[in-house]
Each structure stands twice: as C-alpha cells, then as structure tokens.
Length: 205
Image (tube, rainbow, N blue to C red; front, side, top):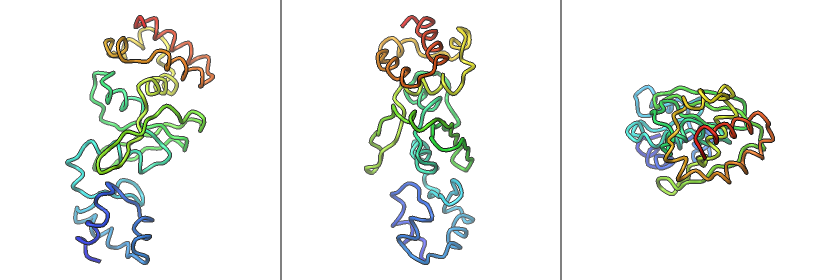
C-alpha cells in the first residue's frame, strides 16, 4: 500500500477509523497504520481512530474530531461557552456531552473529555457547516450553559456563578431567555431549575 494513495483517499475525511479503511480496502494490512504513525504521518486519536499530521496546524478541527471519535456526542460545556465568547478563558480541553459512559482521551491534538447524560437530554445542539461539506455538532449557547449547571452542581451559589465570569453583554443581548427556560423544563430537575433562577437573578436577566 502506497502512503500517498492512502492519504489522497482519506485526507478529506479529517479523521478516520479502521473500519472505514477496511471498507475501502478489504484485507488492508494494519501494520501500515502502525508504521505511518511511528513516522509521524498519522496521529492516533484513540484506539482505532487516526488523523493525518497536517491537521495539527488546523486547530479548529479538534472540535470536529471530538464529534467523530466518540459518538453520539456534541461539543458543549466550557468549550461551547468559549466558542460563543460567553466565558473569558481559553479552554485547553475539548469538552463534550454524550449518552455513552463518561470518557476522556489524550493525544497529540489535545485532551478530549466526555460527560455522560441520559439519552433524552441529548438535545439542544446545532449542526454547523464545517470544512469540505462536513458538519459540527455544537450545543447552542443556552444548552451549553444548562449542561454546565447540570453536570457541575457546585455552581449553586451566587459566588460560584459570579466566578464563572459569564459575559454580561452576551447574556443581556444574545442569550434566548425563553429558550433557556424551555430547555430547563426538559431536564425535570428541581436543583437545576433553582440554579437557573439564581443565575437569572445574579446577572439581572
């Protein structure tokens, strides 16, 4: 198997798994993957999933890879809040929500963290157009905020909510309060409802 032929076929996928390779080339020798990874041509994202090393220079693809290497999942929590400019800090870890078990992966592209929720809470994300006709599953701002308050219950005091340093201009002008409250009711969780009401009071929404 010629590496250039392999790259030309799979590069535009962004990342790929062994199953996809076998569908394309039945009987493909996996030792090729091992060898090309050792040479630095490929990056191992997790067991069975790889990306081409050129994607190191395309940091936006880490969000897309987060979707692909552990499914179903969508980018949410701190990563989504940072994407929308709702929190001031740069987020080094890519954070996602999944209906699978909680998991994390570290590789040459970064750290990927997945928090588990029940399947009926897998809503409130958009399919955003991405490079080469691909789509990125990203929580809407309201759902990203609710996921955070739900999965990190220590945000239950005024001080903790203030320490989030949410962008007040964004909250006042861009956050859809009706959608936030609609999504809150879908959780059917009294503690979350209390946190949301406290947040509304703290930030004067």
